[in-house]
Each structure stands twice: as C-alpha cells, then as structure tokens.
Amino acid sequence: MKIIEQARLAKEASLRLASTPLEQKNRALSSAVELIRQNREIILAENSKDLKQAEKGKLTESLYKRLILNDRKIDQLVAGIEDVIRLPDPVGRVQLERELDQNLVLTRVSVPIGVIGVIFESRPDALVQISSLCLKSGNAAILKGGSEALYSNRILFELLRRAAEETDARFKSSLQLVETREDITELLKLDQYIDLMIPRGSNELVKSIQENTRIAVLGHTEGVCHLYIDREADPQMAVEVAYDAKCQYPAVCNSIETLLVHGDLAAEVLPLLAEKLNMVELRGDERCRQLIKAEAATEIDWCTEYNDLILAIRVVDSLEEAVSHINTYGSRHTDGIITGNRDRANEFMQQVDSASVMWNCSTRFADGFRYGLGAEVGISTNKIHARGPVGLEGLTTYKFKLAGRGHLVADYVEGKKKFSHRDRQ
Image 1 (cartoon, rainbow, N blue to C red):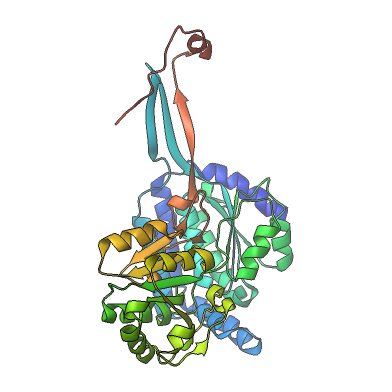
Image 2 (image 1 turned 180 degrees about the horizontal axis):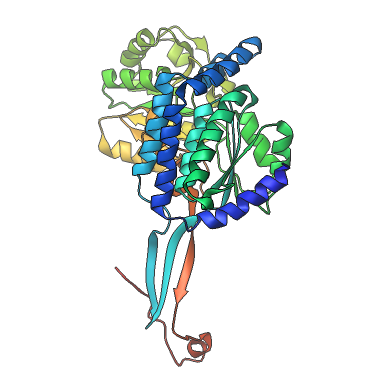
C-alpha cells in the first residue's frame, strides 16, 4: 500500500476515534496486554533476529542495548499499557465554561490532535508506548521504527493492531506501520493528512525532520542537561544525586552532561565526586583541574551531549553565573540544583529556561512514566503546545463549543444586548 493511502486511511480513522468511548479504548488496550502476554515467546524470537542482524553491523553499544527485549522488558511493556489504562480519559475534558450572555454558553473541551506520525530509532518498546498513548488519546498513529528493529516492530505492531481492530471497528486503520527511509520522505510531504510529527532519536534525525516538513514537529534535538551544586548544598547529597544523574543510565537525554559547582564548596565536593565517579571521564575548567584530575574542557564540551560516561565540570562563583551558563549552553531539556536554601532553589527554577527543573533530585526523573503520564511519546523542548515529557495530555488540543438560542451578533453590535462574560465554577 502506498504511503499516501496509509495516511488517508489514518485520517479517516482519526475522525472516528475522536468520539470513541473510554470503555472501548481501554478494552482495546486490555486486549493488547493479553496478546503480548500470550505471544511472549514469538516476540523474543523476532527480537533475536534483529539482535543477530545488529551483531553483524555497526550498531553502537547504546543502541544495541535499547534494541534488546527480554522477559523483564516485556513485563515493563505490559505494565506500561496497564498504567495507560488506569489514566483518566484525556478527551472531552471541559477546560473552560463561560456564559457570554443568558443562554449563550461557551465551553472549551479537549480533543485529539488527529493523525500523529512518529519516527523512532532502535527501541521496539517505543512502538508499544506510542501506540497505547495514541489509542487512549483518540489519535491515529503512523509509526516508523528503525530498520535495526524491523522484526520486533512488525510483531509488536501486528499484536497492537489486532487488539484494536478486533475490539471495535472504529479502530480500523488507526495504526499504520511504515518501514523504509523513502517512506519518511513521503510522510513529510503529507501535511494534508498528518497533524503532528514526533521524532525520537538522534539529534541528526530530529533536525532532519524539522528542516524537511511543513507539518508541526514536536521534539528536542539535544539533551545537554546540567546539575548545579550550590554553596549551600549538602556535599554527600550532591555527590549521590550527581552520580545518579550521570551514571544510572548515561545513554539517555535526561542524564547530565555538565556539572557546575560553586567555588565555596568546590574544594570539599570535587574530590568526593571524583572518587564516586571513578568510571567517568572528567573534563574540567582550570579551577576544577586544580582540585581533581581531569582533562581540560574546551568550549565544545559545554554544549555537547555525550550520551556516555563523560562529564564536563565548571566551577562558578554565583547562582547567577550558573544560570547564565545553563541558559547559554543548555538545550532547555532538564536542569537541576542541589541546595539547602529554598529561596535560591526557587530563584534557580524560575530563571532557568528549561522544560523540567529539579531541586535536590536527579535529572533522570524527567520521564513520562516517572511523572505519572503513563509513559511518553517523547520529550519536547518546544514552548508552544506541549513541553517536557509528552504523555496523554500532550496528545490533545482543544476546540471551542458555543451554544445559544438564536443569538445574533447584530444585537450586541447595535447595543441591544450586552455580554456578561461570566465564568461558571
């Protein structure tokens, strides 16, 4: 089937999905849970084909790890869908109810976006997360996974498609799978059918999508995240949080790439940090290297997303200097402060221009599942529409509904009637 036909069918499905009851959406997701459980061995067998192919190629270690499915990951897939089932319906929420005049009432209600194209690399679990979130939010989805996960994506897609379409005819064609690079090129031209593109993958992928389509794009290009250890930080807490933020899983976009340390605490904290992060390659400014062993940091290090066990360190003299560094070199993804001073923490979180800001906790918490969003379709550093981890709410927009009884604008223009503009509680 041609891509344009798949997109047209998805568009038609999205119009049906917009009014699909919550009960049916949850039934489809429950069916998906059962099918994944019943076909666990088949899923693992298909994933093993992808792993064997990857071993012959040049897949990076981090991408290879993301490609792996095992019993634990399948259990996580199932748990993720069950989390989405438990969430309230994001569609049909009344956001505003305003009486413009007697018997003339305006409401603003949440509605699905429509057709969402999602391009993701390596991780087959992303297909399940995205599909379940799109179904629950009443959106049709066109999915393009990485070629390295071809067999895994095919089986997972087929199980989700079956679960949806066998539950209710309204779900027919609501999930579409495309597989080649040429398909992406065609997808990006179809702004008459696709309402939103969400790229999940490398910086190069995201930038390429943003630069080659008229469709709205939701995503982030880099995760250059920071942790600032303030002069009033608890040194032990600072070291433990920095370790988690860098080492718990370094190959993801919410791990820190730069550590900023206040000069008043640097002599105490940096040696403790160097000992704790002994497996990490440290790159520091001159003041840092006077206190611990580290490679010399360059200007490029301050704006680099390593996705590896590498950390740039800079010593600063004030909270203001730390904020300025983050707003200059950061990617507006996730940044944190360690301090015992609430006022300084609030000042930091107010002034740092990022989608998520943290106080006395790891940047690794910036995640749809950990935020209670029922997983995520991606992270957005945009300021319009959705920002940060994008879950169900981020997959909706809104429409205005106005109900009257023969009301005419002429009556208000001519002064016969006046607006009350009274919000209802």
